[in-house]
Image (tube, rainbow, N blue to C red):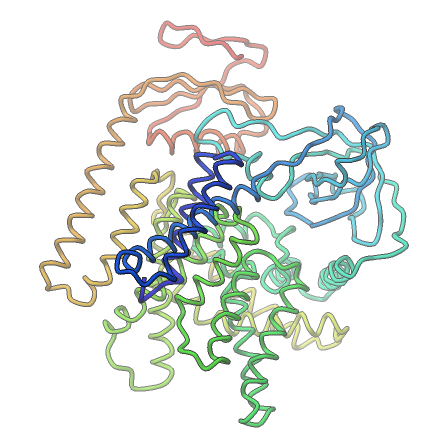
Length: 598
């Protein structure tokens, strides 16, 4: 507690959030616990030896109860209106989402429903899909249309992505589809927030009309303006398979580079005695930029961490990365405890923890640098390795895949990231201010990014180095993270028997548990009926074989992605086959047993 008090208190509050998430205490016990834990803090003021010994435990208990209380407040579901299947609604756009092949998607605020008499539950959010041939929505109009609206379906199987819970964490409880034309009315008064969102949308439209090639336009919108809504599937696949998806959309590394670039420029302009002014102006600029690009979660995390770190510098305190991480995470979780369950939140903070924990010992494995460029390369390489090692267990746990090529790809592309981000930022600024008549500059940027994308596409082609459908449960994940903790000591002194023993015990425990979990799944026999929209798919599992029975349809690729692959991953099965049956069949016979599509 004395060495890292903020980090330990953060862990206590996270335990409280997890406790409330899975045990769901009611209001009276939560308030009782909060009162008791608050009263226990008086131990900090009593100088008796006993109370001095327990004061740290009381402080941890208080933050544990704070975590429970905060998550209780953030988990309250509002009273939802009772809606018919089809309603006439009035709405405004809140956020643009990723499109698919047929539809554009938005988060919208429903402001009114014509046939609904009770109006006390307005406004409320819904995700709405509209056909791509309908005019794009903006932030300067109110819209009225007839929509099909319903609550998301409950997840029936443990291996499926719980889309309903995901939306609920965003305070969204409905899905809607708009099949016909929309009536729109211009807003008489546009809020400051909507003006900023509209300005960003205008710049995105300017990029669409620039002389850059379509693929480069989408890359530029994602890497600087955090808009991946129209990025083509092939590009996304390439970045996912090479482990470079963090570069495609603006994230923490982007904000750090933009901050350092701004600080470098201001330090060249302002005298030395105004160094603190440079830091303050740089912090203000990245926050302004974060608000402009719709303050996404990854951007807010990075800005808050940078701010916490440099506030210590401004106050002439010893700057500590772990203190900054803990303070920024605690602030975010107090505001919205649901962020703890966001994959991006977990990966971001685990990556920073990995950099803090492993970078120094990894750097010592390299020879002493003779040149500045060599030192820069070693530092970038060490940080890249540290972040990749730390986030690998989480990445496999959530995405169930790993590619050895991602290590090489990150080592080659990450050193280029500064040049890519800075040049992309320059292009966006030029386009925003209407400087579109610089053909050589636009051609050079287009060619440069095209070569980078081709290189990433080339890396993604090494399918033999890609492992898919890897199953890791929470127990296995915990042991892997513990192994990463002990890895630091092995790297620092690999000949120390104590270090090797601790790491080796964790490794053997991991494989022993993995064999046990695999054996348990091997012996499981089951028949399940899976639903995918209106389609029914039946799976029959016998030992290490699974047979899927389905009717032929155009959505087979999506069925593989959202039904078959998640199932065989959760059941740790490699051998499966698909049997097709006639479209008018209601049942089938397999190994002497009849199975019905119900």
